[in-house]
Length: 230
Image (cartoon, rainbow, N blue to C red; front, side):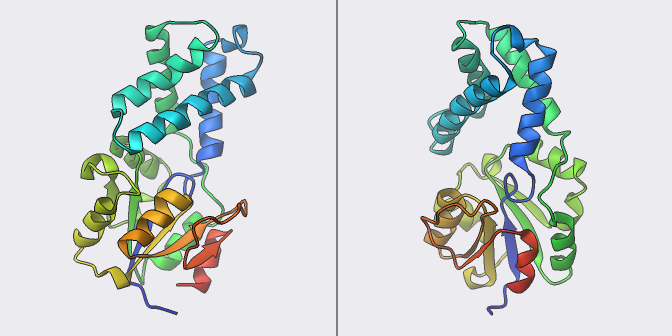
């Protein structure tokens, strides 16, 4: 096996269980704002939200909308499907969702164990498209800050994965060589294809065993399988 020195982790959906945490926060706002008066149930509300959120994130990644636009529009469009056009209400729900999300601490199994295992031998980093203040708060609440030497966010670097410049920034910022670096993430286009295009080796975290469209150097379904690679 190659000997790596610098390990870059995506955060949401790789270490932090985004699906579980997001659902819990959305259920909280659904109850708080009594949205059962307009949606059949929480599932319908959450499904509608994710539809709009994913489209807006696609636009954000390629620079077509700002962070503030993404945050304000996703709930605005969700409510609009039920003929509710209330910017103030949308903004309140959006703020509460963010405030609640960062308090959620569900991690993928083995997160602390694998980071404890890796920390003595490697320099560890987060490389995320998430918003800096949000990601820092989530890391703190999950007691994960102690493992990482640096947190690289697209918001700070001003390029989103999969753009090669975000990978270039993260690698050169720590005076690393490409061959000494490994990118670990769940998104085949954003994490794997992006890192490969820049020249980094990759690990696809694929707990659901989804079809592989962008072949990584390694694939795992459990974070503890990194012990077989590193």
